[in-house]
Amino acid sequence: MDVPAFAASFKPIDWAIPFFVLLIVAEMIFAKRTGGARFESRDSAASLLMGLGSTVSSILYGGLIGAWLIFVYDFRLLDIPFAWWVWPIALVLDDFFYYWSHRWAHTVRWFWAEHVIHHSSQHYNLTTALRQPWTGLFTLKWLWLGSVMVLIGFHPVMVGIVGGINLVYQFWIHTEAIKKCPDWFEAVMNTPSHHRVHHGINPRYLDRNYAGIFIIWDKMFGTFQPELDDEDIRYGVVKNLGTYNPLRIAFHEWLAIADDMRKAGNWRDAMMFLLAPPGWSPDGSRSTSREILERWEARRRQVGPAE
Amino acid sequence: MLELLIFLGSLLGIAAMVLVNRQLGLFEAATISSLDDATRRLDTDQIGFMAGPGILADDNRTALVEEKGSGRIGLLVVAGSDVVIRYLDPGSVRAAKMGEGRDIHLELNDFTFAPVELAISDTSTARHWADRLNSMQG
Image 1 (tube, one colour):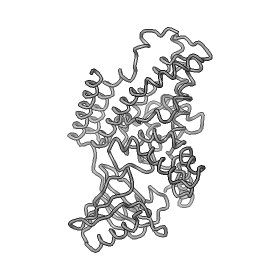
Image 2: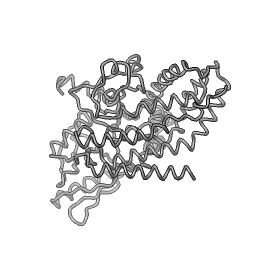
Image 3: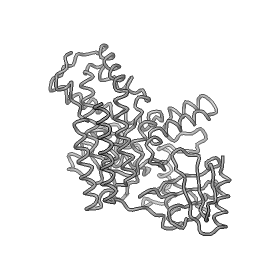
């Protein structure tokens, strides 16, 4: 199938980068004037360097993934054209797969090892949006989940563009500067308020709101949690990092998994360290998100809802 | 060559943004105001943490709190505008060395945790906690 000229050369993220820079500076000025956002320079530096490293790593392994998708495209079920009406369908479908990919990134430690990087800042500002992993290749999700739309019949170029649009959309929601959007927008779309919850480590915010563009997926699949006025959000990960070193940030969870698997007493435990939810351990000495929530709910029942 | 120029330009852009961030401030350095504050933070972080004896460093930047029963030590360290917490079990500590003054230089067997100085004014207290931390060596 011929790829239209505009699509062949259109890279949404490349186009968006100047706006990313302008918006970050604007948010910093907003923070200075109102105190409505927090930036810590070492944290910002780490996030921005992670973003740059992610771009470099994507260039390094992008060719391999592109070649794989072109190979898979030969086995497509349908011939879906580059018609105007296909684009919104592709965008919604891509967001649906993004929801599941993102959900598994939080619930399977193998995939979490890559995604944890994005959550590893205790700050929540537009630089956090750019704190991206370098090791997407290692999850191997591109071999199967990333290939589904291409197997259906969407051209790899179209899949790449709508995936890029999805990521660009998610940039602006990484802010504390916007409290709430209009009700109709909050009901359908992912917003700063919904995504703040996703980055929260408060027990009732853990593993909620996986949406990329449309929050409807969380509402459909039971993972939606609105932001609550009476609960300040603590950002980061359950075991926060005590380093701003980009290399340590990029690889720490992979190394932790390798160490756990090496020390595991048997094959079953070794595989569970890789495939079980983050926080799983054979002796229960660590806690998964579900266990943390259960402890919090038990405490709440004990001392009352004011706690 | 073009890619290299884009990469170097991006590094310059990042440096400029970080410089703007640094010049504007934009955050308030965290402190641990008291041992009660440390205990409250631990209980929020790890629901049900039963605080025992503890020590707050003189600069309010680090604290150690023992957990009743388990023998674990909760370590709190200020990092910028936030506090990072670790729970020290046997095997967690690489070394806890008394410094020139009364500081304890603490290194953990933790890839994601930079070495930390605990400023404790009383020498015997510092010695007690250094010994306690060294008992957690692996």
